[in-house]
Length: 253
Image (cartoon, rainbow, N blue to C red):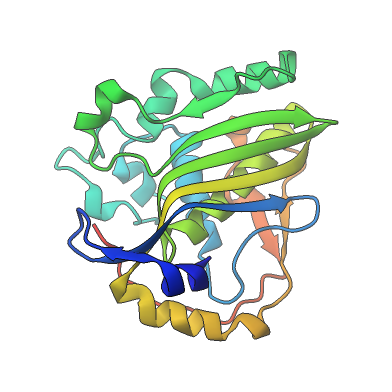
């Protein structure tokens, strides 16, 4: 996808002021029974990604200070004077008890076609420090396997997407474990997949590493946890994660 965007992407400006190369409607799909999706051609901060995921989905928090207490600072640039990001992300999950509804439906009616968690609340968009990028998940059960489709309106291929694809794969493992299913298919749909022009050099280096990529690691989740709200970052680990080192990039705010 990165190679394709760099070769064929449409170049233009955007709200950040840093121009991008972009392509629409990019799709990745992983069978989680076969592989765990995390890049090996560059280092991805797995534990940081897990902490952000738990902050949104488990703590259901919009308070950046909760994340900082976990020594995670990925939201510092968007923190408002009151310490929050407004009515964004975890706020929307908590407001409508969306995780509880999802877990309840998976346990009682796993063939429901209405298992959707959405962070895109039109009434609250104006009071969000950043409107959600990875904003909706659709869930499905097939033959004892839990499948999930992530819809992402905007995907920063250098920084955001490597985090998001790993995070939501983790989420499927966690939700599957507490509802009695096995992880299934993870489909990641990105409406606007883009590369910031100040990330091009780093991503070209990453592309040069493709032939040296390592095998995917495996994920280890504490099997004794059966309550979604009891997971901690220490319960979620990668086994044999090998990578080819960091490729620093600046976040566009």
